[in-house]
Length: 87
Image (cartoon, rainbow, N blue to C red; front, side, top):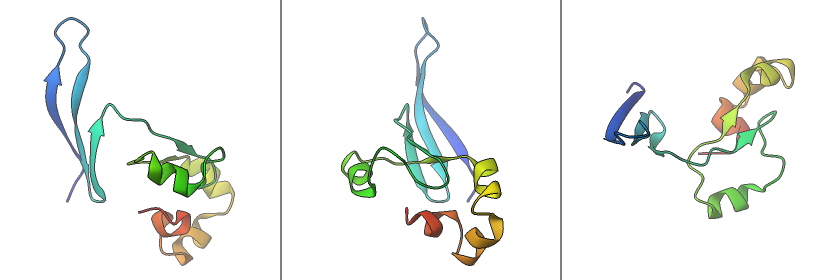
């Protein structure tokens, strides 16, 4: 499966859009709250809190991950999702 954006609705006045972002890991409705995981963790919330909020996606900065812990460690863990313990 590839990444695809399905447009559901556009506001003619503001040009705002609502849709679904289809990814290999699941569908993400937009707009959506996207917490940011610095070095593969969301600093202000636990994983349990993120699950309770029904977070569908966590943004990760690949440059920070490259610097530390490094791509080899993430590969050894089975990829970023397994490294973060996030489905």
